[in-house]
Image 1 (tube, helix red, strand yellow):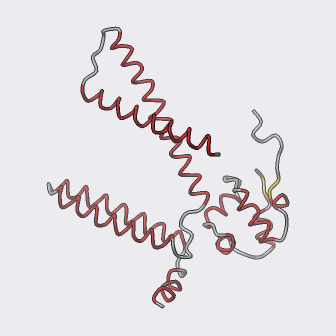
Image 2: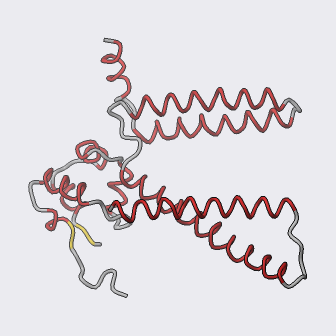
Image 3: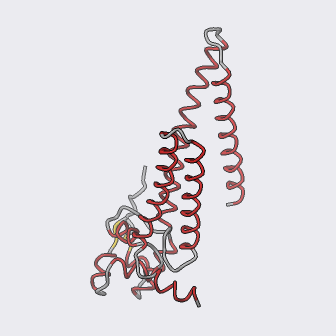
Length: 69
Length: 141
C-alpha cells in the first residue's frame, strides 16, 4: 500500500526515530512503512493520523486492485 | 528512586542498540555451549549456556518493562511469518515424507525403524497441536 508518511514526516521536520518514539514503535518499523514494505495495523495507522492531525486515509492510499486475485 | 535514575540511562540508547546487545548475549550463550562441547566439557558448556541465556532473558524482560520499544507489531508480524514458513516446511514436508514411507510400508517395500517411527509420532503430535490451536482460534475470533 502506498503512503505519504515520509512526506508528512519531513514536512513536520522530525526524524524516523522521533516519530517512532511518538507512536510507540521501533525506527525500523517506521522505515519499513515509509518504504512500503510493511502495512501497519489499524491501531498504528490511527496513531499516525492522530500524530499528524489528519485521517489515516490521508496517509495511506488504498488501491482497490491490491490483493485482487 | 533507583528505577527512576535507571529510566534516564535506559532511554539514552536506541532500541536497535538494545536489540544488538540482546542478540549478542544470546549468541554468546550458544558459543559457550559449543566451546564446552569442543573442549569435551559438555556439562560446563551447558551450565555456561544456561547462565548466559538467563542473563539475556532477565535483560530482555527488564527492557520490555521500560520505555524502550524492543518488540512492536512489525516484530510480531515477522515472527508470525517465520512460524508460518517453518510450519509449512516441516508440516508439508513431513506429510509428503511420512505418507510416502507409510505407502511403501503398506506395499511391503519398507519397514519403519524405531527412529523414523519416533520422528513420525513427534511430527503427528506437532501437527495435532497446531490443529488444536487453530480450532481454538477459529472459534474464538
